Every structure is written in structure tokens, then in C-alpha cells.
Image (cartoon, rainbow, N blue to C red):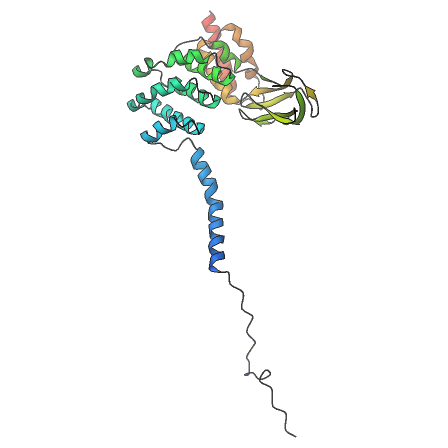
Length: 298
């Protein structure tokens, strides 16, 4: 009996194998969306850095525009930093912006005034800066409500040979006390030992159904907490104490090397101790500053 013929589905050439199923391909539209999303993930951090990095060089036109950009105070800071760098290079073109520096000494935002005080101190030694009103503007800044603005103004005045701000320089070596801005209940606290930048949040309190943020007046390390979460406070109650950052201490010690008095020594001596948080260059500067003060006292 002859064998039944194979059906077409069963017929195959010797050694052949069935082909694997084709994988579905991503559509052109989805591929474009995928690449665009990946590009944005890379681009956005770069754009943020580019727009906040004060080292980016500005043209003269941009400097003039940034100095008057009240909608973006960081633009003003960026321009001030660039002007400060030009001043230190003795660039004569910066004189056109000197009136802006004097104007910004009374700017409503603390960070701008702080940067401005530093920049005006860089102009010492320039004939044009001497008549620009920097000295008088810095003296007025000694009455600023911000401890950091007062301190930077005092440091810049030392470059003018003016020791009027010495008490504010000594204050830069001391702990900053933080008090409750109004009555309320503490809902959140930073941890002891945390490094906090100027303007960083130390605590939050609930007051009248609203959350009030208690911010640091300086950059430093959280040394003491006088409250606990859930505790009720009244306006002016102590919240925390911060040790000043070492950059701030270093600048204050250098200034007191030139203008310090014997009564400043107790504020200097804590930085002569061999502690892990005190860098060697700060410790050495503290020792040298005390020696310079004692020599002057003779």
C-alpha cells in the first residue's frame, strides 16, 4: 500500500528549520520620544548649572542688564562676582558700574548685599574706587540687619585701613544664636552636627495653621538645639546655636591679625585647639593672630 502524501504544512526541505517570529519594532515616533527624553535628562542639569554658575563669563552688555534684573537676584549676584574679578585684575572698564555697587548696598535681598560688600572691598588701592563712595557705603552697611552683611562690610573696611567694624569681625568667630521668629509649635528639626548653609532650614514651626521656616543666619555646623519636636515656643525663645564655618573663621582671623585688640583674644583661642573640625591652617592663623595682637599691645 502506498504511503499517504504529506500535507503542505508537513512538507519541508531536508535540514530546514522554522524561522523565529519577528520582534515588534519601535515606531519612529516612539524612538524620537525616547531619544528626546534621554537628551532632556542630560540637558536639564547642565542648563541649571549653566544658569547658576557665577564663573560663566558675561559680556559688558550682560553685566549691565544683570545688575538691574530685579526679577532674578542671582543674576545680580552673578554680575557682582564678575565685577569683583575684574576689579582684582585692575580692569579699568569696571568703573562704569561703580555707582551700581553703591546702589546695591541697600538692596532688599540679603545675599545681594552680602556679595556687594565683598566686591567693594576688592576695589581698595584703585584711585577710581577711592572716590566711588565705597568707603561710606560700607560704613553704612555696619548697621545692616544681617550678621553676615555686617561682617563682610567690616572685613572690607579693614582693606581701607578702617577698623570701625572690628566688633562685627569678632562676632564672626562666635556661635550664632537662632531664636523663634514667632510663637508656635515645633514640627521639624535638623540633626545636631549637620552642616547648614546660610539661609538653610534649621526648624519648622506651626503657627496659626501655617508653617514657618526658621533659617540659619550663617553657614556653619549645628552645635546646639534648645527645643524638641512638638514643643511650643514663644517669639524670641532660643531654638539653636551654630558654630561658624571655617572659611568665615579664617577671614575673621586674618582681619584681626591686622586690627585685633587684646580683648579679642578669648574669641580667638578656641581655634588654636587641636580638634578634628579645625583645619591646620586655621589653627596656625589663630596662633599667629594672637601673637600679632600681643606685639601691638607692647
